[in-house]
Length: 162
Image (tube, rainbow, N blue to C red; front, side):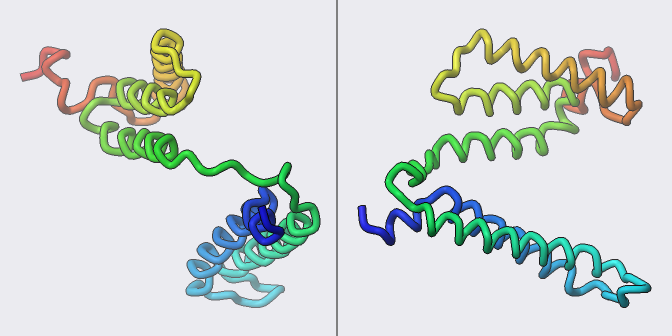
């Protein structure tokens, strides 16, 4: 592995580049807001300051990664299939929340995301899904009294609705 490959695959370099990407995206969104002045800050002032701080941290992280680049600090190739499954779990949750209700949407998203693991076993995965769905319902719907449905619009026949 060449020095350039070691630098480009270094975890710190990759993290720093991700920080730069996030800072750039948020700075782009914040630049449209009025800045104001230091004494009378506008809504865009604080986000841009945070973006500047994140950019400085990103540059320091990248420089540290370049300095420490070696075969040991090189990141393994990304498991694109597993990443897609995890992203798909989030998309499933977003699409299933209203039609299925909070518990089933959480259950499906958790089991789907857990299935991306190499160590996935069905019984513990299902148990994790049930416990997470129950916990989400108790916290968000019961304790915080947020307006989530227990049974979604697709499953209203289970409640005896016409």
